[in-house]
Length: 187
Image (cartoon, rainbow, N blue to C red; front, side, top):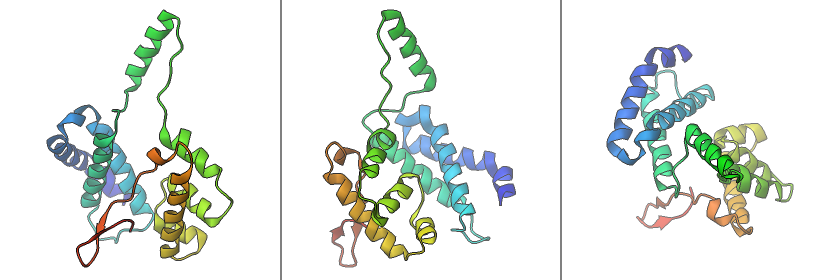
């Protein structure tokens, strides 16, 4: 499958980038990074065995890229380019002040909060999700049903939201419609 990705890399990146440019014109400077991340996540999903051998990975990549773009668009601050940070650092050094690096909510807030949780399977699930693992991978690693992973995840999010300074940095689950058409939280 890696050969398929290598052979179709340019076509996939072009198609995903075009779609993102049309849908999210405010993110033009970040489209390539988003497309690269989507490709990387698609490749990881493929290697984890989530796709059949005959399934086309492009739709998954496009959906992943769109979700990443929505997250970036909704963010209060746009990500800084490395060259921009260097110029800011040089300007502040010239002025005799220290450079304040931007806070990474996952690394600086959420992961330390997870570390403060009681040592339970709920904490283990939260740690693995913060590392980017999906429910299927976590269920296989812990040898528990996927639904139990979801339950632990939901309870861990609730516990994290109760901690001081963390609530604003824990992403709310997407609202889903029930069979009756009502909105409900969680999966």
